[in-house]
Length: 359
Ligand SMILES: Cc1cc2nc3c(=O)[nH]c(=O)nc-3n(C[C@H](O)[C@H](O)[C@H](O)COP(=O)(O)OP(=O)(O)OC[C@H]3O[C@@H](n4cnc5c(N)ncnc54)[C@H](O)[C@@H]3O)c2cc1C
Image (cartoon, rainbow, N blue to C red; front, side):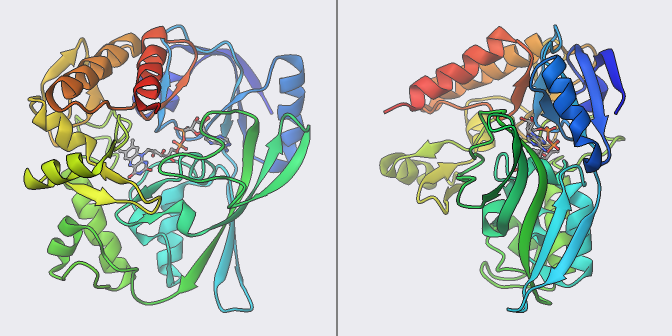
């Protein structure tokens, strides 16, 4: 495994901003993981980068070594109960896996189509979209446990998956090596629960359609919001949703539903409202510049980078949006992307959100 020093991180992220990594290595073969252990011994436990679609890299870069997961491969096995168990290398692209499962007539991840990133990152924030999430299909993961100094297997329950969170979200104790999912052979998708997708398919919410039709409809809806990476799209430099969908209480949910806000009940029993709806309600407009080089997407209420955007400007824009939403609606937004390096303004924003969520 070749280790580069003072290597740019921005081109390895979808936002395309931030400084250099003091040490950067790429792991293409799991058999070479011993080299990562050696790097950690020489320097310190590394940060793990997948496709960089959910990270903000600090302008000063990252003194902690960074290892990019570029392992590849998925092994499908039929289980005695007729389900299919697939074990996937952490660096394998999620998009490729979703297409493969649809092609193999397996249901469980068809509505995750179009989400960028690697499979190893999917348990980190319990990736989900349009009615499916990793928690529905995860069997277990293998990981390197830096505290124990050995490889471990963690069951889905051990991972403590929640709404866009898990034990991995705020700790770099584990490096995920492989992820195992259980899928079911089926011609039809899981029930379509999202209004826009159901409308496009011409079905009622709760009905199912062939797997490829469900995936095509989800992709079309995602494209209309700029939620599929496309190098030719001027809104391409983004991290998807900058903010988590915030939890609302019963009274807030009732008021928001009266205003036709997208308010949904989630598997963890909590009710959440769309962050992008709140951003619009706070008075922002599509394409609006929020901080130097950082503006609203032209298609959806999320931040995108352009020109000479910096991590500091991104943090400033996120702060402006979160403060305005709080002023207009009383609801505090929590930023979603993870920080590589030290960007005090972004850290403060995360801490403020945590503090306002505390009981
Ligand atoms: C256009 C767009 C649309 C998106 N839509 C969605 C969506 O619908 N739903 C959704 O949930 N997310 C969405 N995202 C966010 C993002 O795609 C997911 O979070 C994805 O799982 C990140 O994968 P990645 O490989 O890019 O991870 P990175 O951004 O590289 O890393 C994210 C975090 O995971 C950690 N990590 C990555 N790999 C490992 C590993 N092997 N072991 C330990 N830690 C690891 C990193 O250290 C970091 O903390 C979207 C992003 C974009 C740009």
